[in-house]
Image (cartoon, rainbow, N blue to C red; front, side):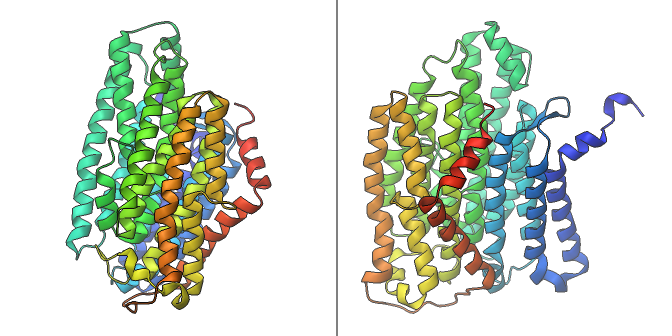
Length: 482
């Protein structure tokens, strides 16, 4: 065997989480072909594989592997666990919806597990081509999941729009990687940093390359002005898919974007980057909240609110440094719980797929579905940033970071737009409890897994807000070596 192509056992062990997820997805697809009677257990098997991947993430030794293409550290472990939490919620809430729509099959958990594997590679990758391969892996799975409801046109339309936007992302990234490699001679983050420190390459071409890379991941985060795809895709895609799609890819994309921002900010090219990121954050917060305020469909409202929340996540990057990681992680964990939880409940109580998700339909349902309505209320209050919830904790940390690092104006914009958000989030709560019921729900399926997912999301949001000490200690431990 040529030693240049040999893979050691230690290197294979460093990919244990991704291998578990990939093998799990393949096994579920084989079971779909040879044991279709076991379909009702597929999602529980998928949860077992996610749990195994989470255990491997927690026990991986720190350090690089595969000649420095990927790394394992407390930082990557923390964000990987957030991704796996989103994957678990996506698996929990799906069976009831898929059974109701006669779509229960092994392809859904298989695609979701493969997507999670790509997301973990995106979090752990420290080389640009590795990041590109990971992004393509997860994107292909998400295209399939977005169009999973084959019998309705809106799902196919959502998949097509997402695919077209994904093609733009791929083109931006490829051109950006080519320019950065051409000017620095390296695709590794460490090698690029060294080249920038030496002043190597044309500043204009390097700046263009990094801007293209940043634009590519801004598409994934649906930041303004790269946000137009999100409302249509969220509205048309199956709701359990959106519970995963709306949070997990954003967690991984934020990790890459933070790496790129810190890379550029610490170089001679970094002079104007903080101001550019502050502009992106402010525009996303304003556009997301103002457009969400006039929405009458709850999925479109949550799509626009997601744009605003990614604006809040960008606030710490307007004053970039190693200190930016902690508020970003706190906010993203809170966002996974409250946003995935909201979509999980939407999955169960709206019986009609596609475009029938009017907020007015919720009138009086707070008394018909007390458990789900209570969980949805907690998620809405958390998304609004009202204490004592995880959403308040996340906003507190990003605003505090902005104030401590000279971005008072940006913090004030964030606080003002959060007040706008309170109006449309509490409108959902108002409909649940303050308006008389106008129509009985039809075609809904509230299954055990969906209830568990809703309770985990809402309970987690409350626990992190009321007793944040252990969570904050875990966050601090994740970044103690930075």
